[in-house]
Amino acid sequence: MNQNRIDMLENELTDFLQKHPHLIGLQFEISKNLAKLDKPEDRLYYMSTELLDSFYSLREELGKLDTILKELK
Image 1: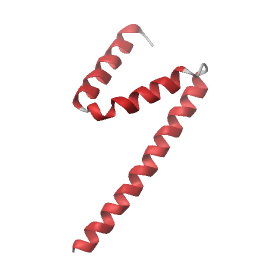
Image 2: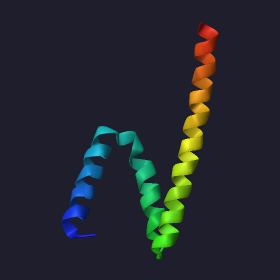
Image 3: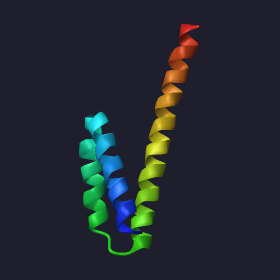
Image 4: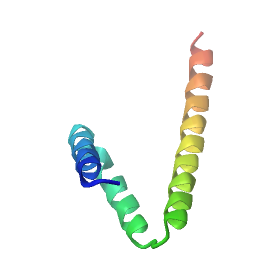
């Protein structure tokens, strides 16, 4: 990846975290864990696992909200 893209992504991440400061701790944890991994395959596996875990958590929360909304009808 060229340096311009890396700089652009870093700026985008910085802007995003400024808008959503409650995610700074999570980003720190992810960055720390990624720094421990040397191989791109390991880093990709870690990120895919994190994304799937987040997806399942979101799906669970949406299911709870759906139940609440159905009870309100």
